[in-house]
Length: 434
Ligand SMILES: [Zn+2]
Image (tube, helix red, strand yellow):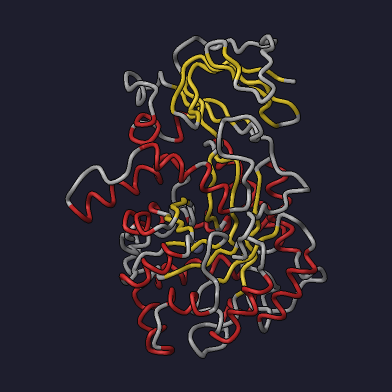
């Protein structure tokens, strides 16, 4: 058993001072507050190994969940900023990197990206993986060699991973994959499902790259194969995607996904930037998660999605650093509110507590990890301690507002991560098919 004394801790009830934790086998077994035990047993036990940091200078929050990552995009950081253009011109630069990757270089990029995540307080990542095959489209001897490189990278760093294996079959509505996209394609949705089944690792979840990349008639095949698993999908990041989808099918991407039975509490719509009122209603009523990636969305000039409207309609907000132009979940939290301010010219849309929930418990849930994201008995002991005595945080207090509106990833003092486990099966909730 390991014991911790935390100056301040973000508990489900708010920030508390002088919190004592006991951890057994990577799981929190006791939380004591001012000497009062919150353990299930109710038996107070003495603290055996006191933390020696000075009192009153830090706050500990649960591990952060980065719900949308393409680890290899990290290679583009600092190399795309001088070119004019749009998401689509950036995509050509990204495809050039994708064309040259091998299992070894994919592993190395992911290992370094995950190491940066872990150092900045991220203890779980949802890796959206579509680079499956050799450059000419031929599968590797092990058709899941690229995916296994990502799992190995997460293991090397000690970060928990949900590998969201993406079905990617088409270059657009009615077009076969072209250029580097042949590396992404399994031919059809059954081919994708067979490969994912052969992966045989409980950390694997599912993804539909987008409605551009999976034909309408094949969407239900993916949905069926992903039953019980987290299913993530890029949705309406670009206006051009919406226009092409409506032209091809007379439906928006969200309507097409609803038709295929793809929406629900185990599903995450990534970006959800350009939505109609009907799209917002469909995502909200189905209790679908929506993963916003504000630092990437502004980097790629995507636009500002209706985060608050989605929340009020019933969707659950989560966060991701996506292309890793920036890896700082504190900045992602802050940016959700700041972008709403720019879009509406009003302040105060999101509370700090709501944004912290998105970055912790709600994010973990969307990855199928219900045992992490809160400092309470029975949860994993993933603990992120933020220094309250840096040049940025000094004098700001220990409350949630400091974590969201003052701190940055550079203020993370210490990260305890119980790491991945071979038995990381997705947790499903009773009565939830999707
Ligand atoms: Zn993405």
